[in-house]
Every structure is written in C-alpha cells, then in structure tokens.
Image (cartoon, rainbow, N blue to C red; front, side, top):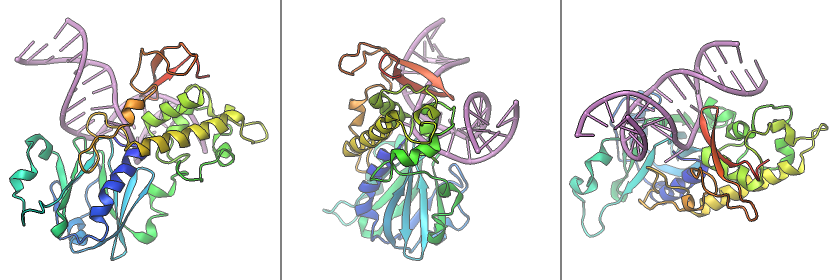
Length: 295
DNA sequence: ATAGAGACCTGTGTGC
DNA sequence: TGCACACAGGTCTCTA
C-alpha cells in the first residue's frame, strides 16, 4: 500500500493522538502478520507511554517511555484508523465503532489509549508487521541498517547518489525501488519521478554517472524530480487508490495528479509531447511511462 | 555483488 | 451467476 508520502501522512495523523498517550490495553487478535508477533508483545506494550512517533523510510517508530520502540510497517494494505471517544458521552458503545463488519474482519491490533480513544490497525493482506526493538538498536536492526537516504530534506544529493549508481546495469526503475539506495520510494513515485525527469525506466542506472564518478546532468534532474514528487505528494496527503485512507478517514489527493501511474493509453501530459502512456512489466511490477519523452 | 523470479496474503475487476 | 485469472502503494529469500 503505502509509500513514503502515505506513511508520513499516517504519522502526522497519529502523532497528536499517540504522542504522550498511555497504552492502557492492547488487543492482538492473531498470532502473526507478516512475522509472528513477539511472545511478550501485549505484555511489553501495556502500561507504556508513547514518547514520540517517528518515521524512517516506510517504517513508523513509536518510541516508548521504557526505551523500547514499536516498529511498524504497513506492507501493501495496512492502515490505521483513530477512534476517539465521543466528547458528548463518556463512552461510545462498541457497536458504533464498527459500522461496517467488513472493516472489522481485518482489524488485527487495537491500542487502547484511555481517554484518548483507540487506534486500530487493519491489514487485509497482512504484509505489514509490528515488532518491538530497543531504541539503541534502531540504527543497527537488520530491517533498518541498510536503508538509504531519505528523499525529503537536503540529504538526497546527486553527488552522493553517483556512487550508488556507478557501474550498475540494472534499469533505473529497479534501482530507485531499491530501499538501500533511496529509502521510501515505491512503484507509484518511481514512475512519477522518472516521468518528471524525462528518463526511461529501462535506462541502465550506471549511464547517469560519468566515467570519473561524477553525476551527469540527467542524475541531477532525477534527484530534483524525486524530491519534488515526494514533497508534492506529502503536501497532498498521499495517494488513495484502493484501501489507503488517512487516520481520520480522509482520502489523499495526489492520485488526481498522476501523470503516468495507472494511466496506460492516455496522452502524455508533458507540454509539446504527444506520446501515449505505456505499461510494461519490470521485475514483476507494472511500470508506466511515455516512450516519446522519457529517454 | 547483482539481477530477476517466487513467495507471502486477500480483495477486486475482467472476461468467458 | 459462477469461475478462472490477472493484478494490487512491499520486501524478504532463493536462484543464476
């Protein structure tokens, strides 16, 4: 489901409810998601206060007051929803929380937060997961240690990327999906960034680096495009396709601004280009691009 | 080391 | 209507 802009939108939606909240009760409704839950998951979480909610790549990290971190990933179909108590009543009956039985079928974890209500993790495909790690491990944990630079802020730069692109014959599409190069891009935003940069998803990544190891102008354009598309998508609250919604139930808006993703057959939106958006498959995943203006 | 295929799961849309 | 099949915001593991 979610790429970096969606995860960041989720973080912003959950932070006001979660930060400072006491976890009064935990419902873990099945033994596993993508991974088994730790045996002491409920026990270690119950009674803890959440100090901060951070994001790294597509991971959410809830820092707890005892030095543990609740590490969460939404996989393809994970989402959170916030269910706050009705301020007009002391307690909202449970029946009002679940107006659609279909939703509740994939509610796997419920964190009760006392007077703040509760947050519910729903994930039909169960590719997401929750783990507890020590805060001191967050840099070295196998899932986090190899992550590349964030495409937000100033960290992402052509000079730094050149070393990771040099010599690679893999197509740009594959290298941009590699989380150890840039952390947080997924299928949508890779397609959109390559369109904005005017680069073919099939071009070998190494062709964006000079023999001396210096970045080419094309790599500079790609870096600008990645940063811009991620910033635009975060500003729009992410993209809502099938099941992604923000924590308060609102839809993201960036899907209305896709230039290529899921737009096979439509005319390229680039001024002066009359190409047609095509769909191809690269390493098992759909790529959308304009073969006329993306070279 | 690196590139690609398969695996994990459920839901939805399409064509017959 | 039922059924088979393709496909979906991810990423780990295995194979060449």
